[in-house]
Length: 300
Length: 300
Image (cartoon, rainbow over all chains, first blue to last red; front, side, top):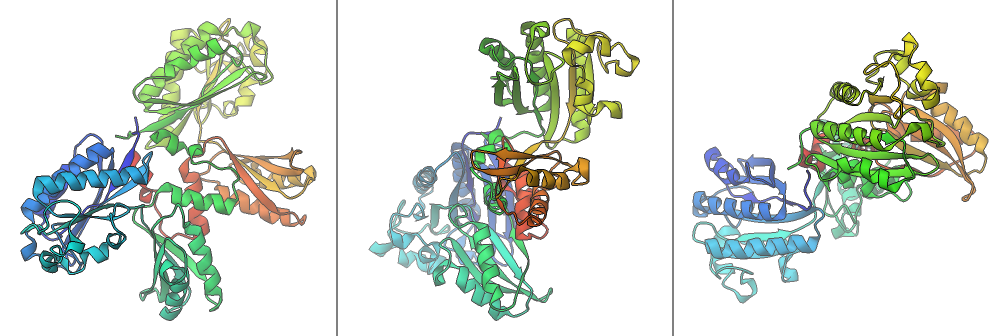
């Protein structure tokens, strides 16, 4: 009952239109002990499918490697078009520690997958984010710059020798980035104004890049159908930058403009701890431990 | 991976001193598929052990019935003394719906256990709380009144015929109450005063019995070592009376006395939903669903 270690993996494959191909790619995540397919979302414009799977590290590893093989078989990047930047048939494979597993272990898992898949499929692989071997390779966008079309040249430069696999692209599958990161929480805060400039100014105050919270990315967004704006955030490590902290900072900054928070949104999945941490803050619960949460104990 | 239905059971046995006997009673909850022993807390003064177990309904049912048999073997109520009111070797067996299981199903489970155990052990059993067959039997304290010593006479009156089993007590195990209820959350709110009267006045405002929230029990308590008082609550159905609602009412009432909340405590286990509900309130999250919580999906 339950599992000891739980890792999440969110591989992105460069096929968002051909349903038959998508089913083939997703199939290795079905009906396997220790692997649970939570979701897969395809986007026709992006021509990309994002798969969300959780489970025991070894079982997830095997299923991911299998799915990578299928993607290489069915996707031909020389014919791929889509709005989302991409560099390979398996564009990116992040591992995310969820339960009883450290980031170090998630990084190890990413490296094992990169090693095995690179050898098995003759695929050049870059390690990124927490698994990166060089600060320059932490940011996925930096690795992916030039996309599939530019990658043949790019990986010949010594600076961009892949971490695993050959120093030339796979002719039809390009290159892949495999890495480890914390869970992302997509958290948006709605304001009672239609002034996008205000949302953008507040976003600048809360986001890391312009002086705000370390693990927060933010932009202003217009919700034109509702006649309001929102601060749209990606919380990149809720264990260090709590949701309530970003929320309260937005409230404080909005006050400068006589603007109020009218609500918020959480898009997609959120780890329970991100919200429990928030409840514990607002209730001022002393000496609370996640071990007091029934579901933590059930999943042990 | 994970389980479909999860029920919790918190049987209370009338032995809190003899460690060997306690281990024998707890043993049926160990090493069984679909059963997870979360905790057992014995109290020497109460001379009682409270076991907390979760798992698949059928597996938990079998384990509980087995443990009841052991308790009947090792406990002799004619020699039992303890501060906590009690009427039998297995004093009370509540079933609590946790996941993918309705209260109706928990009630059914309670009735099955009561039927099987009463026949197997010739034990008179009362159904209580949500499983009660009569409003008079909803409250455990009403059933237990008279305790073990008075029970031989009490159950001979037609009003107190047991729901299952013989209309006479088990000579050494007395009688048992089996029932179903919502999870309890023990939630205490600390105030910056040492005036117990203020805590008691606030407790009266928030608790159901004196005009407050429907699923809230509350009393004032002195924390003499810290020189403060607290409103000590049992939240008896957090799905209907949210934690934050009690918290905010206490804040409002405390204001009358110029008193502030300085913190709170959650004692023991709490279902994640009770805290997530609170976070969703304070962040004003729109259209949130518990299915967005990663752990909900993992446990499906």
